[in-house]
Image (cartoon, rainbow, N blue to C red; front, side):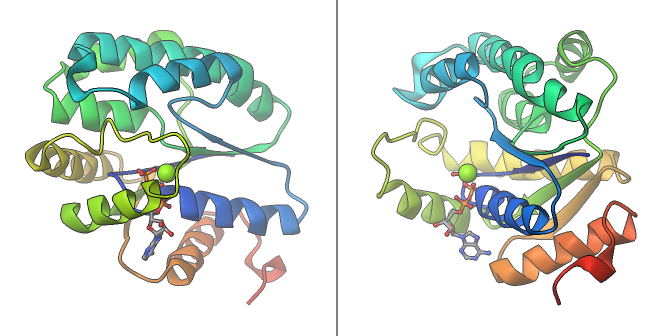
Length: 216
Ligand SMILES: Nc1ncnc2c1ncn2[C@@H]1O[C@H](COP(=O)(O)OP(=O)(O)OP(=O)(O)O)[C@@H](O)[C@H]1O
Ligand SMILES: [Mg+2]
């Protein structure tokens, strides 16, 4: 099972991916919790290039290609091997983020992004994608508060302007609409426990989880 967590800054993706991983592990499911950009030693090096430094550090095209360079490494070394051995892979951001940020946010041709996906990943898609939707200001506030505790400040995307973040939010909602069987949109201002229950309920309804074996 391949599950991705998508949405703008500070919407609660990492929080929910971690809680879901813990719940699944308690039920003896083998879980690989990973993230993008990054998720393999090589891709983590590329992550550092992408998420630190000045906003205008990279041209949009360089950013796309770095994202896909990282994704190729992550796919080959982490995600694919885990899926091949039957593990659940929970991925904190994946290809929809490239469509939202560099596609809808920066105007990169969506067909070009699809071609890249085809060549790097092939025909495999996430089984399910949770898209976290939240007021842009609220998300940035949360992300900034979270970063205050960071040793390495990964604030390059957070520092981009508010209109850009609004296009990303709208972009994710468009992606959800275009892929209604794979994607489910969650209201990210609910309590984390409520969101976790919604995620479990969704997976149960889709037949991915046996609800009876999960805690009430
Ligand atoms: N449902 C929620 N309600 C209120 N605060 C939340 C909720 N979920 C997470 N938070 C808090 O908001 C902050 C950001 O959450 P988190 O790191 O999970 O978001 P994220 O989507 O992974 O952010 P980023 O895009 O920066 O990686 C954290 O401090 C977290 O504790
Ligand atoms: Mg996160």
